[in-house]
Length: 138
Image 1 (spheres, rainbow, N blue to C red):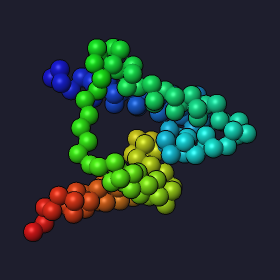
Image 2 (image 1 turned 135 degrees about the vertical axis):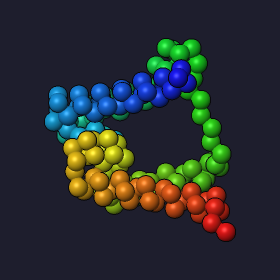
Image 3 (image 1 turned 30 degrees about the horizontal axis):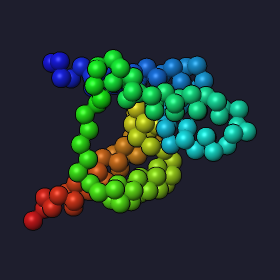
């Protein structure tokens, strides 16, 4: 059970931060939209977008301080592959009018039909990617 506590705490914090952003600012916690907002410093929501993103960036150091060690991560991909994957995710995010945080965390909680379709598309695409990348299908 103890191994799941950090993941559970992280999930609770994600839900709490998304809820607070919606209740206090009337905004959906879609990270791609918040990042896009950082490119518009004249936008009145810029400071709130920046504060939310700084909070996301400070998450791992806060974990390290509280837990006494950095979160464990393992990347088996090369840096060029990660860069291409990041660009494809960014393209898909713009194409799908949002990311997994906006559609998956906030949209599903609001039972948004558009978000349900988007999340099903995310899941199908990720499963297909794993099948192709790992060569699961003979």
